[in-house]
Length: 88
Image 1: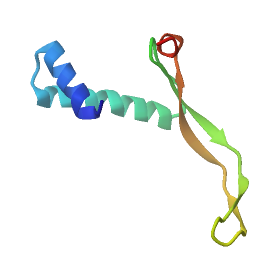
Image 2 (image 1 turned 120 degrees about the vertical axis):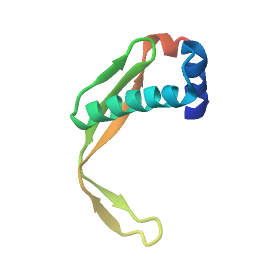
Image 3 (image 1 turned 60 degrees about the vertical axis):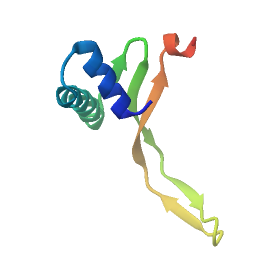
């Protein structure tokens, strides 16, 4: 399923136009993105939790040359599956 399929399902279920359903979908995704940027956790019951984790700096190895490359610390988004979704 892709984003366009979700928009169609929203449109069909709520009887709103596809343009309005697309605005709804974009609003939901923007809310999730903005919360993650602020470092907040987003919990969707029955689905799972989006959160941001800090990755420590580390040394990686170039596969081409074999030399070590230092990678800085960074923040990465993570999705943890909820119990209901795991049981499917």
